Length: 262
Ligand code: NAP
Image 1 (cartoon, rainbow, N blue to C red):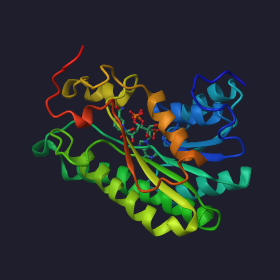
Image 2 (cartoon, helix red, strand yellow):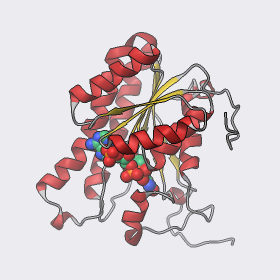
Image 3 (cartoon, rainbow, N blue to C red):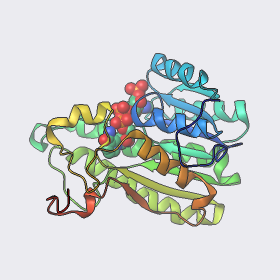
């Protein structure tokens, strides 16, 4: 097993099974890797099988047990196959990370009706599809932790991002409702709202419309998000459910975005 660069105990996730949607690329890949380096067995799913397989091979070279499922999260049968396949292989599914999403910058006047629907279908409906499939197949009986990768779009409007902001706000609301409804079943449901995260295609695509000003004076890394996932998925967060945790370098609390101390 490779040494993991992390503040957490190396066996924090030992014995756990996780499913990470969109786990073949970007932030999802680093989440899958960090869960695996801390002892979890990890299933990843998305649409591009060759990308998933390349990631699984990379993770395997670090000693991580990883299986892949080709599944568009809009396709309920494909989602159910991925969940069933994970259970067939490992007999458990303790952690679900709803990370898959689609996004692009566009003004409302340029957004086609279909483009808005596509983002809502992937981000909001897709999150619901996977969560419901995992709940029904295993978590209703055995409990678990669901972590939805959201966005810091909860309290403000976002130009160029009306579609993604609307869909992610729906996910944040769903996070709270599921947390409330399932608390008695030992299921914790939380959100993580990443700020501007470097080394990701997402930010590369949106780069012209974003600022890298944060209170901690750096752009975030995928590891910053993976660390939050490790915490919220672990027993250290046993009393936390229904939150949307901002991991954004403090930028969400600064209205003026004018540095006071360099
Ligand atoms: P990314 O590299 O574009 O990853 C998106 C992943 O979702 C890909 O692996 C993609 O794989 C998968 N995906 C897309 N549509 C799918 C579908 N219909 N079914 C199944 N999988 C699908 O994005 P990222 O930047 O790492 O972002 C990861 C998460 O963080 C997203 O939820 C994003 O909204 C959130 N976030 C990111 C930032 C940032 O700064 N990057 C900021 C705020 C929030 P396939 O193409 O193979 O399907």
